[in-house]
Length: 113
Length: 117
Image (cartoon, rainbow over all chains, first blue to last red; front, side):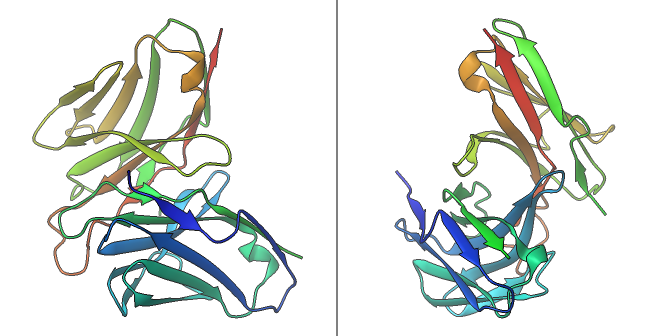
């Protein structure tokens, strides 16, 4: 079974703090993705990575950055958290080129106060 | 611009009856479609998919129908069970995008399905 884990289930941070969200997958997947889920908006892609040290912007990258130093780990960074970044953050992974089924972690509920 | 739309935020169905969840898309380049189910406090899990070369795909109680001319797909659950109560997301991909598309999915807003015993 593919397992995608996220470092925290719940996180509360203050405005202006730097926030790190970590994601680890154990199936040697090439692709990794970060989404945020908001009511009425569904899942929106923030960033994705198709290889170590490679990244591409998704639909809503503003205010976020990512890091992928190892194949199994993909980090989402909020350089200076703002209240409009309060959301559910979901990490996903998939096999590689031509693979469209993504496997999701349980999510991190981030609240920025 | 929402390229994948699920216009019904919620659906309520009696146990044993059919649940029909709908999804519309605007990007004619989308050629692969997936449905995901999400329970509270869990990540979405893959349910069923369909390629644009087909108009129907079945897996047990779940059937997905694709109408390319209408840019519409639907998920049928028969018979519905209380354990099917969850948020359902449809997603779409352009498999010919090439370059760095790398399996990117565009998701709809989700539909909350409630199946009453």
